[in-house]
Image 1 (cartoon, rainbow, N blue to C red):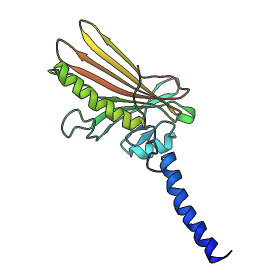
Image 2 (cartoon, one colour; image 1 turned 180 degrees about the vertical axis):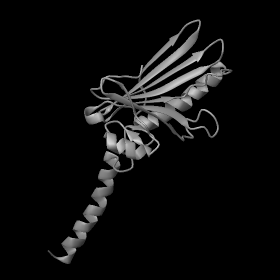
Image 3 (cartoon, rainbow, N blue to C red; image 1 turned 90 degrees about the vertical axis):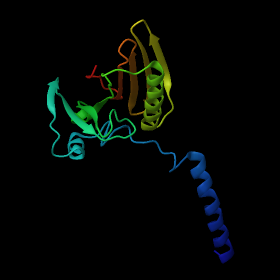
Length: 190
């Protein structure tokens, strides 16, 4: 091959690779792994325990399912300044793999007005979208004399991430949970 053809081939590669990357989104738009903190849905039990460290103590629950509680520092979802977020993970998939993750963002002390709660919900929804790597889908809103509730579901190949939020009218208490459930597994956390 002549030098002229080699240079043309090199220029063609330099033009094609960035174009393909922009069109497909690789690697800039790759979706985040499906899970929370150090855990991912489908992660094996030994990998999950190693990721959580020596302080993690799974407890047997039912039908061979184990649960492990841990806290994760997360500025985007922090309930209170400097307080880590409480998380529950279920090890109930094939071979005890991580099948379910539940993050509690409860603000039971109350005192939130409806506008405050809606602003909080917007921030939590944006973070859920980022964690899921998707925009919101399948929104359901319910309101009655006691509370207003919102449920969002994000569906991926690996499973579903649901955001459940509830604002209590009288006390102003807010309860939000993010719930990851692996595809083909049944929820233990209700």
